[in-house]
Every structure is written in C-alpha cells, then in structure tokens.
Image 1 (cartoon, one colour):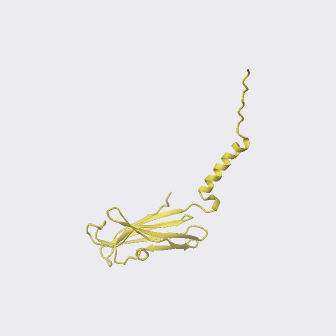
Image 2 (cartoon, one colour):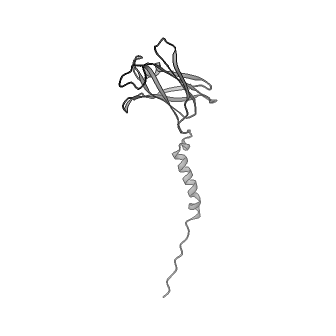
Image 3 (cartoon, rainbow, N blue to C red):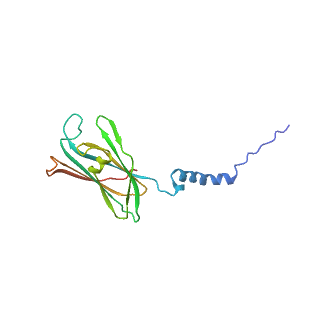
Length: 170
C-alpha cells in the first residue's frame, strides 16, 4: 500500500506580502497618525511661591519665593495649548490638581505665568506658601524658561536667582 504524500503549500503571497503594511498601518493608528495630529508634547515646570515660615512642614528656608514661567511660541503659526497646576505637599502627600486652562500664542509671542496666577488658579490666598508643578500640554514645541527668585522680605532685594530652560518630556 502506498501512502499519499501531502504537500504543504506556503501561505498566499498576497497575505505574506501585505503583513508588513498591515503592521505599519496599526503602528501609525496607535501613534495618532490616522487623526493627522502630532503626538502631545508636555512640559512640567517646578514652581515655588509665597512666604515660607520655618516649621516642620515647610520644605525651604524662611523667606519669600517667586517663580516666573516664560512661555514662547517659536513656530510660524499660532498655537493653542493647555496648562494646569499640581500642588506638592510635604511627607509624600499629593496635593490638589487644578483643571486644565486654555492658552494660545500667535507666532513669536510669549507670556508669563507667575505666582499670582498659580495661586489664583488653585483657589489659594496670596499669603499661602505652595510648591508643585505647572504642566503645559501642546501638539508643537514651545520655549519654556523658569525664573526663580527669593528674598528675605517682600520689599527687600533678591537674595538668590536661578533660571532654567525646561525641556519637553520624552
């Protein structure tokens, strides 16, 4: 008795050739390529604001702290984006997070986000001391620079100053 030999045929060339194209399309869809929008760009900027009085809960030296965040649109077109504020509390406790607020800049325009705005958006009194992060979300890159100053009293000269260019998150 002779056993018939079964031949296994390779998969259709149409399917095997189209597989890389299907995988590429799936990657584009998952990265937002199908919607035509660029992936989001995010900047997280540290802020330190208000009068700090030395006690067990204050993480910095006694003094008056100010943060000024400068945001510039280097693009050739206007840009709309969102910003929010997240408070960092002592002892690894999370603080409140504001809602997102809309912002917009025309080409080459810039604006400043300062402690007065941060405290107002968080619903806090100007006499509060607060630290945390200002978070900016956009579809295109921005120039973001934070300026930090401190003084011994509200009317005294600056004791320290630091500027920092804030990179986008990878």
